[in-house]
Length: 273
Image 1 (cartoon, one colour):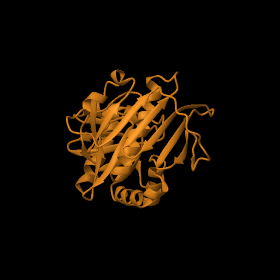
Image 2 (tube, helix red, strand yellow):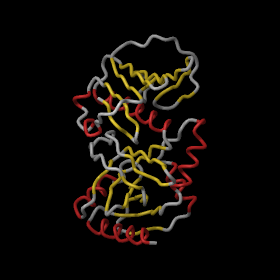
Image 3 (cartoon, one colour):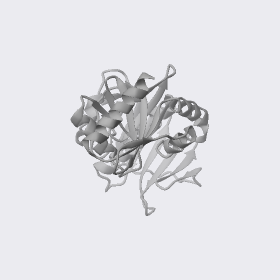
Image 4 (tube, helix red, strand yellow):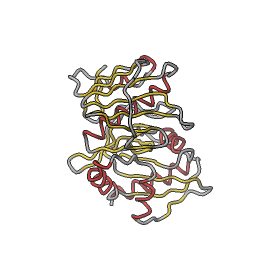
């Protein structure tokens, strides 16, 4: 299946493709520029020392290829992702299910997009309201999805993506690029929007905004974006600098109607400025 993500056509061949219900919303008829193939094939290349180690994967360089060795929190390896030019191959453990493949294909798709466009991954829930693109972000469990549901209940907004948002800089404007990798609730729509406002949420009994410095905004942003490899630092700085030009609001709220109303009024106010 050829899909279009952030303007890139990618031929995606997944084992559990039929279970990935949102994938078909991105299907296009154009020729692919990149290829992702997922299988239960074995991967037998001998690996040396990794050049990158993280909690969830290690990365190795083999000739012109990058090999990502995926692991669980307890250190068990369960898959390999091999990046080779315009092709990405996913080698699954025989016990892998749709859940593992969903995560692995997510790594593959975001690597292609972020390496080939001015994009980064932003952990947030995004909506389009009156042609305003809004990103709600916070630590996991704070209530991003719940707040998004308030907006859907009390306004005519459209949910773009409830979890993994691609923020793209193009022609000196920031855009929310939709994609089917959208978190455990599978809430998404193939709707593109400018990114106009970012709201960082925290839980509070009373609804209200706290004024924050640009340095505080940068710190909050840094905690919710995926930092690219070293060779992309210039690109990352360019995108982040543009994001920091946006209104960044810090909002303490509960999950009642007034939380939506007060937030909507403030956003409408700052967008007019």
